[in-house]
Image 1 (spheres, rainbow, N blue to C red):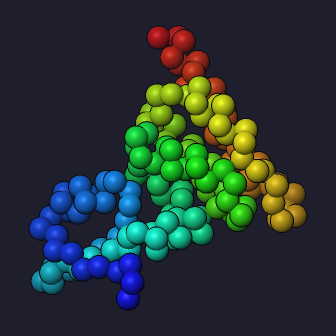
Image 2 (cartoon, one colour; image 1 turned 135 degrees about the vertical axis):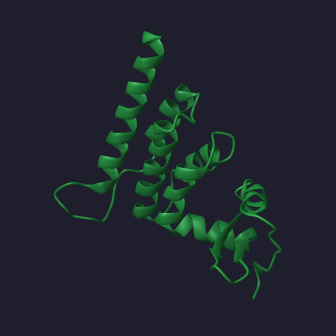
Length: 148
């Protein structure tokens, strides 16, 4: 299957180092008496999954860093799927909340480009709530920096 690859992994540390460039995503399966199985998706398949999967986009913010996840998430401001855009905003929130974003001014300048419209007619629009949560978190981080 194109884009799928079997790799030998000696430890979780080596797997983490391999995936750190955020050019691949992996599913790890292990048991007490079984070897570790890793299914890795890389290249174009990885990019397609990230661009179409809200869970994956948000996960980048939970595990990524400013050097890799931050530019990747900012680059998805115009995703055709509003749920992905909302997840990207939540991912950016996680980066800020974890203290991974030192350049808050870049975030403040780029986030208003995000398309905040959706086809969801719920009373509270998920994407606008994610935007508001992110910007409030940025404000709190900036206030803490000024106070120090």
